[in-house]
Length: 299
Image 1 (cartoon, helix red, strand yellow):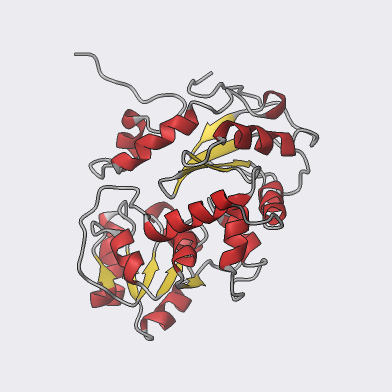
Image 2 (cartoon, rainbow, N blue to C red; image 1 turned 180 degrees about the vertical axis):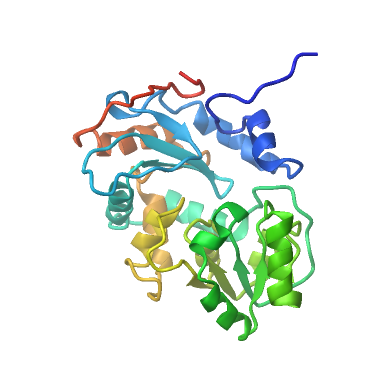
């Protein structure tokens, strides 16, 4: 039997690609519904730029757009954004000015009540009131302000390791924090639903879901760290300061926006939302990619 090779261009719900990234930690089958949205995405971004899955790059001193990226978010959305922190934040700030719609209110309630783990994890009856959700090993030591985390442990916080945390990093955390570490294979969303206080960094969907369910949210990004997956959303909601109190109403406004780039299979017009997102940026100057790609292909 021939060896199955990894796709040159990783795409949503490509099981071979996800195996190479996640190994035996399988993804929740609920993510399969996002294929409905994936089929609606254009092959390219505006002006022939690439639209790529689950990556991030930025040109902070360049006012042009070099490409677009997308990822699966909160098991209910595809999150599209320009590969520019400046413009990705701008569209979220603008979206926060929209009025709350019935669909936005519905999506907010879905996050609050029906959130699911991205991976297949074991449910738990453990119900700590304060949980800090840590990122994966690839950014754990780059993004997390561990001094502040340690202060919160003294206040009763537990640490939930990411399902893909390496054995070395998990052992290191156990050595430092001992019985305050929660097994990485336990369901994060089981813990999230019981938590009165939720801690995370701006790479994580947990703070957004926690905000929808009414928890207090604490962010633990290191000062000056590079933007991550959801940083533009957190920047808008937190008004650019980690110690601000975000408003659940602002999150409802973002979810109501027809152009934010957050597109769910639960809305009646997902294709229109995708078109509105790209139309928002069509008049910005774009840069042709050196290695052009079509969606779902390596070239």
